[in-house]
Length: 323
Image (cartoon, rainbow, N blue to C red; front, side, top):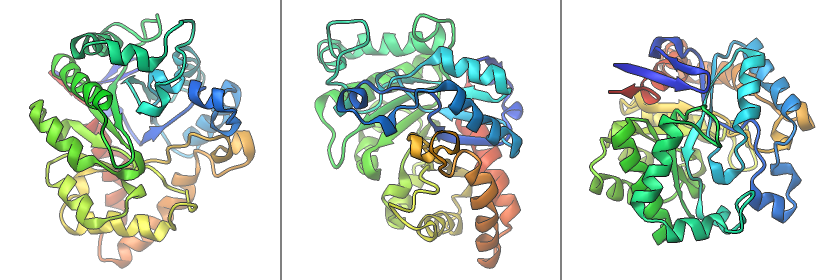
């Protein structure tokens, strides 16, 4: 039996529709609260909902909310956004990245770092399994993917522990797995550890691939069968859109069009139209897709068909539980 798990229940894969594969909707990361980084606090559900409504009005169906517990996930608020807009949302179990762990856990005296350092891989695995099979944050809302993350040009022992726990939770639940790669680094090193845990890499997606716009690197990841998520669309402060589109088209030229995911990782107030007049959740559909189709057609491809793969067919396969 195959299904996709949204926060409002399990659906058939063909019901997923047009999908953004990595976003953040409502979250207040404890680390950024401590640092006073207001731009990184998506703390007004009404404003977040307004942008999700723009996504829906533009033709969107589903958003993958990649917010794990250590990134200040608020599953009740996100569930309400889904209910109010009718947009399907896939929630995320597991953890994000290590520098966020050295902050107090809400309502507790310990930090995430203390918890992860003291817990065994088996205990962390059990926690992730509960988030997928029972519910998150004391609710009955279940996660539809599992996340782990590693740092910039390094994997520390706690990150390796979380990676192994995430994969073992996958083996139990069959939930898809998502990797945070800091600035697009360490994916190949992660793959060695993932293979050690005997996961079929077709169940794994690697995030932030456009932060490291290296076609050779992308090709090596794609050869494993994994998905590559280009989730920085619209962030010209990193690279112009031409760089991202070129990387995507290079993968397509090599036959990997069935393994590419697209999103905006819209995790700042200044990225949201409804918070601070930024590009918002409508940007990819209304601005980026027409440009991509034009450039893909100019390169000799069928741009419309590629859009169907990048936003419908590929997410459908990536986020499916296969039991």
